[in-house]
Length: 590
Image (cartoon, rainbow, N blue to C red; front, side, top):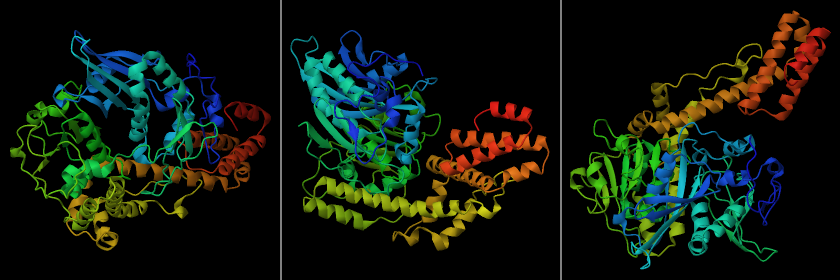
């Protein structure tokens, strides 16, 4: 990895900096190997300032750190996505986020240690190397000194991380002050970020940002779904203000779903099945939050298709996603431009929302509307679709949330109820699939050290469907309906494909790990002495390849097993003639 210029005030790669650190025995040793700007790059790709020029239109005015690389196509995407559409009329300060494709061929410059962090994340928080997120703080205020009559500028954080709540909080802290103080302040902000510890899942992290210390915990794949470890606010010895973040990635679920209150279960089905969905909203803030809420409603399943929290007519995928020559793709789009009401009229499922406000009274029942009734973006809020849900409507969750509105239950508490409902629904659906896929794993007695690891059994849709009669979702859910039809549809979706590939990879790696353990439990030296030198050398080379594979693919193997295998290799080599020993000891680590 090439050395990069040091960040201003980064204090060297090993500097703990500004009170950043972690509790709970966090291992910060790997940080010592990080170069200047590596800490920054672990969290952000860059920070951009997008302004409005009367002659050029939207333009990237500043990219920080200066060495950050963005292609012209990426800059164009950032320019158009960082400003609300003119019809939104967003006066004052607005926050939203967008997601766009990275240009291909970009080299990843971070060390392997940071890749390790990604492996410890829940599947729905893992980075997608093909996309960037843009987190925006847009300000539009009247300014008579400017020709246009308005000051319009966006501060944008570009990151590979889907930590919506964290970066929203960061922008709230820094953007208002940046608009007053400009470039020098931005440099100081980036210097602070370059002091942050790496984003290690499962640890309490202290992140200093302009005199405040944010405390947070990134979830791990080991966390029980639906649980959140509380991060306590603690008194700082150096009198700095401490702010505990309850989450890094979650949005206010109830607030987002309030406009489509009575259709949450149908929307869960549409997202689960990877159906094409458009969210038409009055501003990027509403569109982005609603799209992110939709994507998160099938957690802990990962939504495997593309989704764009804010999508514009200038997007490079505009033609691809709006063409009428083929069926709409599996994607969720958030739009605000009235032009889309006509352009996407052929899409099968459209959610139209007004301004998101928490109602002071109980929302009224709204029927699903026919698509032909949607002609303009001014159409009434609601869900426009001809989709017939597979499952019967769960009236209990609607009553529970309605009661909460009547009793003025805090929106955070309503969101917790809604999130638990979605989680239980998703788990009831996925547990039968997990159980069946686990049965495809060969028995441990089938693993022989002297044969290649056995293959997983083939997934049979008919075989799986037969298991549902006795071990279906009825074991954990009281919901009635056509579960079989829902599974049949799901098995054709990108979400099933992504989920199954992930499980397949995990189980294949488990088989490789069990095969390694079986090899370690054999007396390999005794075997080599009973066979020819050529066969012994062949065994050594194969065992070395196994070690390389375990390291390369991060197989779930105990360190003791790897040490034992290295000892076996060493002992076999020492039992061979001197000339062979010299050659084999030079061909890799033993």
